[in-house]
Length: 258
Image 1 (cartoon, rainbow, N blue to C red):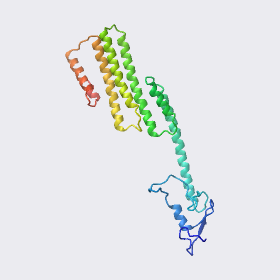
Image 2: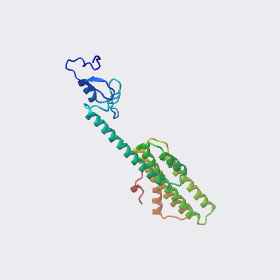
Image 3: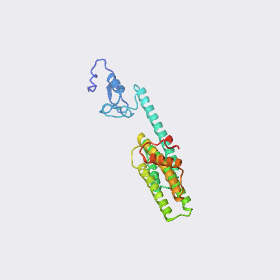
Image 4: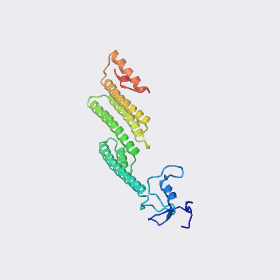
Protein backbone atom coordinates (compact mmCIF):
# COMPACT_ATOMS: atom_id res chain seq x y z
CA UNK A 1 0.00 0.00 0.00
CA UNK A 2 1.58 3.26 -1.11
CA UNK A 3 -1.52 5.49 -1.48
CA UNK A 4 -3.06 7.46 1.39
CA UNK A 5 -6.82 7.63 0.79
CA UNK A 6 -8.69 7.72 4.11
CA UNK A 7 -5.62 8.89 6.06
CA UNK A 8 -5.34 5.80 8.25
CA UNK A 9 -3.34 3.64 5.83
CA UNK A 10 0.10 4.44 7.38
CA UNK A 11 -0.86 3.23 10.87
CA UNK A 12 1.65 0.48 11.91
CA UNK A 13 -1.22 -1.83 12.92
CA UNK A 14 -3.40 -1.05 9.93
CA UNK A 15 -5.26 -3.92 8.30
CA UNK A 16 -6.81 -3.85 4.86
CA UNK A 17 -9.78 -5.21 2.96
CA UNK A 18 -10.04 -5.75 -0.80
CA UNK A 19 -13.32 -5.16 -2.63
CA UNK A 20 -13.84 -8.10 -4.97
CA UNK A 21 -16.11 -6.11 -7.30
CA UNK A 22 -13.45 -3.60 -8.34
CA UNK A 23 -10.17 -4.72 -6.71
CA UNK A 24 -9.56 -1.57 -4.68
CA UNK A 25 -8.01 -1.99 -1.23
CA UNK A 26 -8.84 0.14 1.83
CA UNK A 27 -7.84 0.37 5.48
CA UNK A 28 -10.40 -1.67 7.45
CA UNK A 29 -11.46 0.76 10.21
CA UNK A 30 -11.96 3.66 7.81
CA UNK A 31 -13.78 1.40 5.35
CA UNK A 32 -16.00 0.12 8.17
CA UNK A 33 -17.02 3.70 8.93
CA UNK A 34 -17.68 4.31 5.22
CA UNK A 35 -19.97 1.29 5.05
CA UNK A 36 -21.81 2.19 8.27
CA UNK A 37 -22.52 5.83 7.46
CA UNK A 38 -26.03 6.76 6.27
CA UNK A 39 -26.28 7.93 2.67
CA UNK A 40 -27.66 11.47 2.34
CA UNK A 41 -28.13 14.07 -0.39
CA UNK A 42 -26.34 17.41 -0.46
CA UNK A 43 -29.15 18.97 1.60
CA UNK A 44 -29.02 16.26 4.26
CA UNK A 45 -32.00 14.17 3.18
CA UNK A 46 -31.66 10.36 3.07
CA UNK A 47 -31.19 8.91 -0.39
CA UNK A 48 -33.25 6.07 -1.84
CA UNK A 49 -32.18 2.53 -0.97
CA UNK A 50 -29.07 1.65 -2.98
CA UNK A 51 -25.98 -0.52 -2.77
CA UNK A 52 -22.90 0.93 -1.12
CA UNK A 53 -20.34 2.16 -3.62
CA UNK A 54 -16.57 1.89 -3.74
CA UNK A 55 -15.28 5.25 -2.42
CA UNK A 56 -12.74 5.41 -5.25
CA UNK A 57 -14.56 4.31 -8.40
CA UNK A 58 -18.26 4.16 -7.32
CA UNK A 59 -18.58 0.49 -8.30
CA UNK A 60 -21.51 -1.09 -6.39
CA UNK A 61 -20.26 -3.35 -3.59
CA UNK A 62 -22.09 -6.66 -4.11
CA UNK A 63 -19.55 -9.21 -2.90
CA UNK A 64 -17.56 -8.86 0.31
CA UNK A 65 -17.49 -11.32 3.22
CA UNK A 66 -16.69 -8.62 5.75
CA UNK A 67 -19.71 -6.54 4.77
CA UNK A 68 -22.01 -9.44 3.93
CA UNK A 69 -24.66 -8.47 6.53
CA UNK A 70 -24.84 -4.88 5.26
CA UNK A 71 -25.17 -6.07 1.65
CA UNK A 72 -27.87 -8.63 2.62
CA UNK A 73 -29.86 -5.95 4.44
CA UNK A 74 -29.73 -3.61 1.42
CA UNK A 75 -30.77 -6.42 -0.94
CA UNK A 76 -33.62 -7.33 1.43
CA UNK A 77 -34.74 -3.68 1.35
CA UNK A 78 -34.63 -3.84 -2.46
CA UNK A 79 -36.89 -6.89 -2.41
CA UNK A 80 -39.29 -5.30 0.07
CA UNK A 81 -39.59 -2.15 -2.07
CA UNK A 82 -40.03 -4.27 -5.21
CA UNK A 83 -42.89 -6.20 -3.61
CA UNK A 84 -44.51 -2.97 -2.44
CA UNK A 85 -44.30 -1.50 -5.95
CA UNK A 86 -45.84 -4.66 -7.42
CA UNK A 87 -48.65 -4.63 -4.85
CA UNK A 88 -49.27 -0.94 -5.49
CA UNK A 89 -49.43 -1.64 -9.22
CA UNK A 90 -51.97 -4.44 -8.75
CA UNK A 91 -54.05 -2.31 -6.39
CA UNK A 92 -53.93 0.62 -8.82
CA UNK A 93 -55.06 -1.59 -11.71
CA UNK A 94 -57.95 -2.88 -9.59
CA UNK A 95 -58.93 0.69 -8.67
CA UNK A 96 -58.86 1.94 -12.26
CA UNK A 97 -60.84 -1.08 -13.45
CA UNK A 98 -63.49 -0.38 -10.79
CA UNK A 99 -63.65 3.29 -11.77
CA UNK A 100 -63.95 2.42 -15.48
CA UNK A 101 -67.03 0.35 -14.70
CA UNK A 102 -68.54 3.27 -12.80
CA UNK A 103 -67.82 5.89 -15.44
CA UNK A 104 -69.37 3.71 -18.16
CA UNK A 105 -72.74 4.33 -16.50
CA UNK A 106 -72.49 8.11 -17.00
CA UNK A 107 -74.36 8.85 -20.23
CA UNK A 108 -75.60 12.40 -19.61
CA UNK A 109 -72.09 13.88 -19.87
CA UNK A 110 -70.38 12.08 -22.80
CA UNK A 111 -67.44 14.49 -23.13
CA UNK A 112 -66.59 14.24 -19.44
CA UNK A 113 -66.97 10.47 -19.63
CA UNK A 114 -64.48 10.36 -22.52
CA UNK A 115 -61.97 12.57 -20.64
CA UNK A 116 -62.15 10.42 -17.51
CA UNK A 117 -61.68 7.18 -19.46
CA UNK A 118 -58.65 8.75 -21.16
CA UNK A 119 -57.20 9.72 -17.76
CA UNK A 120 -57.70 6.20 -16.39
CA UNK A 121 -55.58 4.84 -19.25
CA UNK A 122 -52.54 6.85 -18.10
CA UNK A 123 -49.70 4.77 -16.70
CA UNK A 124 -48.30 5.52 -13.23
CA UNK A 125 -51.39 7.34 -11.95
CA UNK A 126 -50.75 8.76 -8.48
CA UNK A 127 -53.07 8.15 -5.55
CA UNK A 128 -54.16 11.79 -5.69
CA UNK A 129 -55.03 11.53 -9.41
CA UNK A 130 -57.10 8.41 -8.74
CA UNK A 131 -58.81 10.22 -5.88
CA UNK A 132 -59.66 13.19 -8.14
CA UNK A 133 -61.18 10.87 -10.77
CA UNK A 134 -63.18 8.96 -8.16
CA UNK A 135 -64.66 12.17 -6.77
CA UNK A 136 -65.46 13.44 -10.27
CA UNK A 137 -67.29 10.21 -11.07
CA UNK A 138 -69.25 10.39 -7.82
CA UNK A 139 -70.32 13.98 -8.44
CA UNK A 140 -71.17 13.37 -12.10
CA UNK A 141 -73.25 10.35 -11.10
CA UNK A 142 -75.20 12.55 -8.69
CA UNK A 143 -75.65 15.29 -11.32
CA UNK A 144 -76.81 12.69 -13.82
CA UNK A 145 -79.54 11.63 -11.38
CA UNK A 146 -80.64 15.26 -11.11
CA UNK A 147 -80.83 15.59 -14.91
CA UNK A 148 -82.90 12.40 -15.06
CA UNK A 149 -85.26 13.83 -12.44
CA UNK A 150 -85.63 17.04 -14.45
CA UNK A 151 -86.33 15.03 -17.61
CA UNK A 152 -88.96 12.84 -15.93
CA UNK A 153 -90.76 15.84 -14.45
CA UNK A 154 -90.74 17.53 -17.86
CA UNK A 155 -92.18 14.43 -19.56
CA UNK A 156 -94.92 14.16 -16.95
CA UNK A 157 -95.94 17.78 -17.44
CA UNK A 158 -95.77 17.61 -21.24
CA UNK A 159 -98.37 14.84 -21.17
CA UNK A 160 -100.90 17.28 -19.74
CA UNK A 161 -102.86 19.81 -21.83
CA UNK A 162 -101.13 23.19 -21.58
CA UNK A 163 -101.50 26.77 -22.61
CA UNK A 164 -98.74 28.74 -24.29
CA UNK A 165 -97.90 30.33 -20.92
CA UNK A 166 -97.57 26.96 -19.18
CA UNK A 167 -95.34 25.62 -21.95
CA UNK A 168 -93.15 28.69 -21.65
CA UNK A 169 -92.98 28.28 -17.86
CA UNK A 170 -92.02 24.62 -18.27
CA UNK A 171 -89.22 25.44 -20.71
CA UNK A 172 -87.89 28.32 -18.60
CA UNK A 173 -87.87 26.14 -15.49
CA UNK A 174 -86.06 23.33 -17.28
CA UNK A 175 -83.47 25.70 -18.79
CA UNK A 176 -82.81 27.29 -15.40
CA UNK A 177 -82.35 23.96 -13.65
CA UNK A 178 -80.15 22.60 -16.45
CA UNK A 179 -78.02 25.73 -16.07
CA UNK A 180 -77.55 25.07 -12.34
CA UNK A 181 -76.48 21.49 -13.05
CA UNK A 182 -74.08 22.68 -15.77
CA UNK A 183 -72.42 25.18 -13.42
CA UNK A 184 -71.76 22.40 -10.94
CA UNK A 185 -70.49 20.10 -13.68
CA UNK A 186 -67.93 22.67 -14.81
CA UNK A 187 -66.75 23.14 -11.25
CA UNK A 188 -66.40 19.39 -10.71
CA UNK A 189 -64.44 18.83 -13.95
CA UNK A 190 -62.05 21.74 -13.47
CA UNK A 191 -58.42 20.62 -13.78
CA UNK A 192 -56.88 20.21 -10.33
CA UNK A 193 -54.14 18.27 -8.55
CA UNK A 194 -56.49 17.18 -5.78
CA UNK A 195 -59.81 17.92 -4.09
CA UNK A 196 -59.22 19.67 -0.79
CA UNK A 197 -61.39 18.72 2.18
CA UNK A 198 -62.97 22.18 2.11
CA UNK A 199 -63.76 21.92 -1.61
CA UNK A 200 -65.35 18.49 -1.14
CA UNK A 201 -67.48 19.84 1.68
CA UNK A 202 -68.57 22.85 -0.39
CA UNK A 203 -69.38 20.71 -3.44
CA UNK A 204 -71.43 18.27 -1.38
CA UNK A 205 -73.31 21.23 0.09
CA UNK A 206 -73.98 22.66 -3.38
CA UNK A 207 -75.09 19.27 -4.70
CA UNK A 208 -77.57 18.93 -1.84
CA UNK A 209 -78.79 22.50 -2.32
CA UNK A 210 -79.22 21.97 -6.08
CA UNK A 211 -81.24 18.80 -5.50
CA UNK A 212 -83.54 20.71 -3.14
CA UNK A 213 -83.81 23.61 -5.61
CA UNK A 214 -84.82 21.20 -8.37
CA UNK A 215 -87.45 19.52 -6.18
CA UNK A 216 -88.78 22.90 -5.08
CA UNK A 217 -88.86 24.42 -8.58
CA UNK A 218 -90.61 21.36 -10.00
CA UNK A 219 -93.21 21.51 -7.23
CA UNK A 220 -93.74 25.24 -7.78
CA UNK A 221 -93.99 24.77 -11.55
CA UNK A 222 -96.63 22.06 -11.17
CA UNK A 223 -98.67 24.30 -8.85
CA UNK A 224 -98.46 27.19 -11.32
CA UNK A 225 -99.25 25.13 -14.42
CA UNK A 226 -102.26 23.54 -12.76
CA UNK A 227 -103.33 26.87 -11.26
CA UNK A 228 -103.52 25.31 -7.78
CA UNK A 229 -103.76 27.65 -4.80
CA UNK A 230 -102.26 26.71 -1.47
CA UNK A 231 -103.76 27.40 1.91
CA UNK A 232 -102.26 30.09 4.10
CA UNK A 233 -100.17 27.67 6.20
CA UNK A 234 -98.76 25.90 3.14
CA UNK A 235 -98.02 29.24 1.49
CA UNK A 236 -96.01 30.30 4.54
CA UNK A 237 -94.02 27.05 4.42
CA UNK A 238 -93.32 27.36 0.70
CA UNK A 239 -92.18 30.98 1.09
CA UNK A 240 -89.86 30.00 3.93
CA UNK A 241 -88.33 27.23 1.85
CA UNK A 242 -87.74 29.65 -1.03
CA UNK A 243 -85.96 32.11 1.28
CA UNK A 244 -83.72 29.35 2.65
CA UNK A 245 -82.85 28.03 -0.80
CA UNK A 246 -82.12 31.52 -2.15
CA UNK A 247 -79.86 32.38 0.81
CA UNK A 248 -76.16 31.60 1.04
CA UNK A 249 -76.54 29.84 4.40
CA UNK A 250 -75.50 26.17 4.75
CA UNK A 251 -78.52 23.92 4.37
CA UNK A 252 -79.09 21.04 6.74
CA UNK A 253 -81.96 18.59 6.95
CA UNK A 254 -83.42 20.48 9.88
CA UNK A 255 -83.33 23.69 7.88
CA UNK A 256 -85.59 22.36 5.15
CA UNK A 257 -87.93 20.20 7.21
CA UNK A 258 -91.54 21.42 7.32
